[in-house]
Image 1 (cartoon, each protein chain N blue to C red):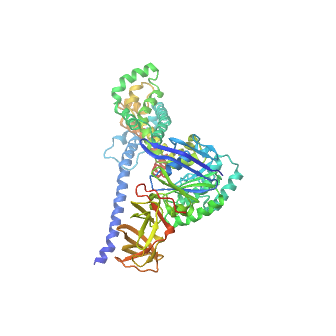
Image 2 (tube, rainbow over the protein chains, first blue to last red):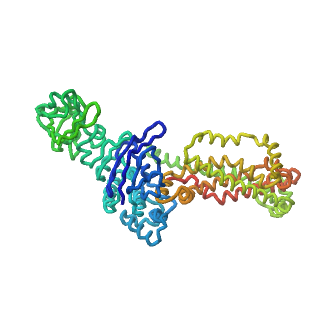
Image 3 (tube, each protein chain N blue to C red):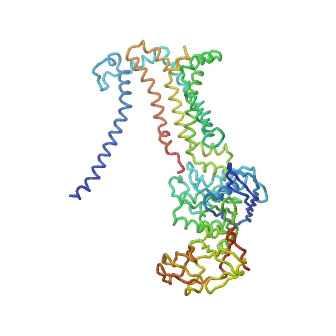
Length: 350
Length: 280
C-alpha cells in the first residue's frame, strides 16, 4: 500500500506538449480516476507513473520515494492494460503467476496467491487454458487477477473496460469495484467513460489538454464543475451553458431573480438538465422544445432557452409536444455561474 | 420459378467456388511437384530412363543405384557438407545479427531510421559480379579464399538485409503491450525479450532462418568465384555436371532440391504460424 505524489509533471513530444505541469496527490488506498477525452494526456501520465514513458520534467513519488529513473519493475506497482496484454504463450495460471515467479516466490506462495486472485475474479475453471480459448471478458479478468496476485502497492488501470461490450462492461464495473474495495489497493484508473469514473472512483481528476482541470469526489465534480469543460464533459446530457445579462449583481429569469458574483456585463449560467421543474411559462426560464423524447425513465427535451441550445430532463409523467414552449423553474442551490471570458466557474455560494 | 432459381443459385455458386478452389490447389501443387517428380525420375531411372522418349510417367525401372553411384563420385559428398556448412554459418550469423537489428527497427525510434532501412536494402543493389574481383583479392589477403567460412560470410551479407527487414516485421507483430506488461511485472528489458517476445516471435524467426538457409543453399555465383577446391554443392555441380551424363545431372538436381524441401517441410508448422502472431 502506498500513496502517490505527482509533482509538476511535464511531457513534450517534440513541439507538442502532452502534459503541461500536472500535480496530483493520491492517498493510500484511494481510487482515483483520470478522466478526459482521448488525446488529453491521461494515458501518458499513467505511463509516466508506470515507468513506461519518461517525463520531460517533474517528480513522481510512490510511498514517499521518488521513482523517476527506476525501471517499471522496481516501482512496486501492477498494471492492467487496455488490450489486456495477457501472454498468449502461457496458461491462465502462468499468466496470473507471472509477477510472483519474477519475484522468485516459492511454489506454495505462488499457488496460494494465484488461487486467491483467481477466486476473486472467478477464473478458477480456466486456469489450465490458454488465453486464445477465452472471451474478451475472461481475458480481462485474467489481466486483473495477474495484477492483484502480486499484491501491488499501486494498481494502474488503462481503460481496462473499453474493449468490452456494453453489458459486460457494466457487469465488470460492479465486480471491479467489489474486488478492489476488498483488496484496498491504491488505484489510478484511466478512462474516457464518465459513468465508469463516477461509479468507481473516490475522486476524479478531469484531464483536459495536458492539464488537470478539477479534482474532486464524483458528486463535487458533477455539481460544481470548476470549468466549462468539466461541466460539458461530465453528465448526460451535458451541462447547459446559457449566457445571460447581469444588472446590478442580479440575473433575472422570468419571475425568478438570482444574486450572481458579477456586477454587470454577461455571465454564463451552468444548468444541469435534471435540476429544473416544470412551471407555467414566464415563471422562470422559458424553453422552446424542438424534440421531446420519452425515454421511459424520464422525458428528454431538446430545444433552446433564450435562443441558446439546451437539453433538460423532466419526470416521465410530464407530457410535452414537439414545438411547445414550456416554463422551467430553477433551483437556486443547484446553479453554477461561470465567467464568459475564461470559462472558469465562480466559487459556489456558501 | 423464382423459388427454384433461389435454391439452385447459391448451391451452384458454392460448387463452382469449390471447383475453382480445388483446381487452383491442384494446379499449384502440379506447378511445384511435377518438375521435382520428373527430376527424380531422371535421377533414379538410370542412363536409359533419362534419355527415354516419350517419357514414362510411371516409376518403372527405378533403382537407387544410379543415384548412389552419383553420391560416390569424388567430391560430391564433400561439397554437400561444404554447402551445409556455409548455409549453417549464414543462418547463424544472419539471425544473430539480423534479429537484433530488426528488433531495434521495430521498437526504437531513432534519427535516420528510414534512411537506415533504405541503406540496408541498398547493400543488395551492388551486383556481385562487380564486387567479385576486389572481393577475391581481399579474401586472398585475409586468408578467407577457398574456405567454407568465406562463402558463409558472403552469403550472410546477401541474407542479412533480408533477415533484418523480415524480423522487423515479426517483432512489430508482437504487441508492445505484452512487453510492457512483462516489464511492469518484474522483467528487465532483456528478460522480457527472452520470456515474452522471443517465444512469440519464434515461428517467424524460424521462417527467417529457413529463408537464409535457402538463399545460401541456392547461391552459385559467389560460391564459384571464391572457391577452388572447397566448393559448395551448387558451385561443384555447375563445373562438373556440364561434362556428365544426363542422369548424373538429374541426380545432382535432385540433391540440390531435396534438402530445401525437407527443411521447409520440417518447419512448415512455423511457416504457417508466422501469420498467427497476434495479440490474441
